[in-house]
Amino acid sequence: MHECKLYVVSGENYHPDRGLLEVMEAAIRGGADIVQLRDKASPKRELLRKARAMRELTRRLGTLFIVNDHPDIALAAEADGVHLGQDDLPVASARQMLGPDRLIGVSTHALPQAIAAERAGADYIGAGPVYPTGTKPDRPAATLSYISEAARAVRIPFFAIGGIHPGNAEDVLAAGASRLCAVSAVVGSPDPEEACRRLRGYIDRRQASRPPSPSAAARARLTVNGRAVETPAATLLELAAEYRLADRRVVAERNGEVVPRASWPDVPVREGDRIEFVHFVGGG
Ligand SMILES: Cc1ncc(COP(=O)(O)OP(=O)(O)O)c(N)n1
Ligand SMILES: Cc1nc(C(=O)O)sc1CCOP(=O)(O)O
Ligand SMILES: [Mg+2]
Image 1: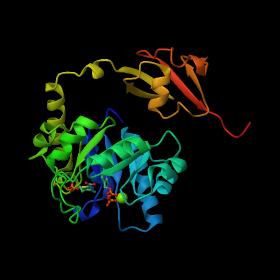
Image 2: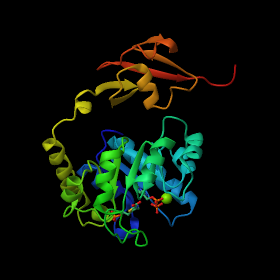
Image 3: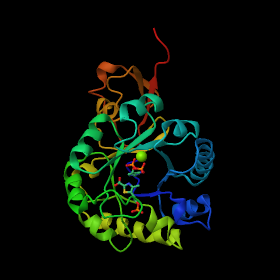
Image 4: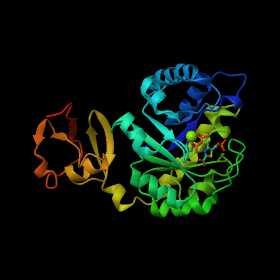
């Protein structure tokens, strides 16, 4: 998740003559590294069919896949997670349904909502709408000021969203965003792959020109439960806290050896480590 920089959300009304998978595949080939199925019109069975097709596509292309609004569809389609708005299910309920490993994203329109989402255990947030947008016409713009506030105060990844296109992406990045999310500018473009390539280019150039922060320099690359991750955690306890497992009934293994819980604060996590968090199943 931390590595994801360009998030593309589907919107089939923007491409009536082309299929969902064709457009999303083009977006991924152009550089989208996380995609979302957002479909307000289809009945649930149809939604599940689309979600399964997008799961297959994203598995093949190695991209994260999120379902908008519906944790049950996310589970049934084996998606990587769900995205929830302020009027959707609360994070805690979705977490109960999805378990600790799936991603939960939350829409936020002002800083207090971002802080609340972070505290509730969201894995990432959407921050916007940065600009007024026809994709969500009733929602007033949160403006670039919110992006600057989020950049200062939010620790989990945040994606700027709302009215973003190649013509204003640099302004959004200059305001402090390092991740962008778009619907119409990509899926409504005659060339979604090129639209993503341009957005991705701005993101990557901005990232290359930023001095590496001390915390970024200190991040270690590990494998956690089989997934390659980057983490600022220095100890096993900090890593467990990052995964919200510090207070859970789990066993931790580091490079194949069980680490007693009492030692977690003292055991360092280092570049290349393989960490497994194993959940207890059942009572006892
Ligand atoms: C990445 C991302 N950010 C925001 C939203 C909007 O979610 P929500 O406010 O629930 O509105 P709907 O998309 O459900 O209409 C999103 N979907 N994705
Ligand atoms: C779905 C959505 N959520 C938003 C939010 O701010 O929560 S803005 C938005 C629409 C984004 O579409 P486009 O890239 O076409 O402007
Ligand atoms: Mg929603």
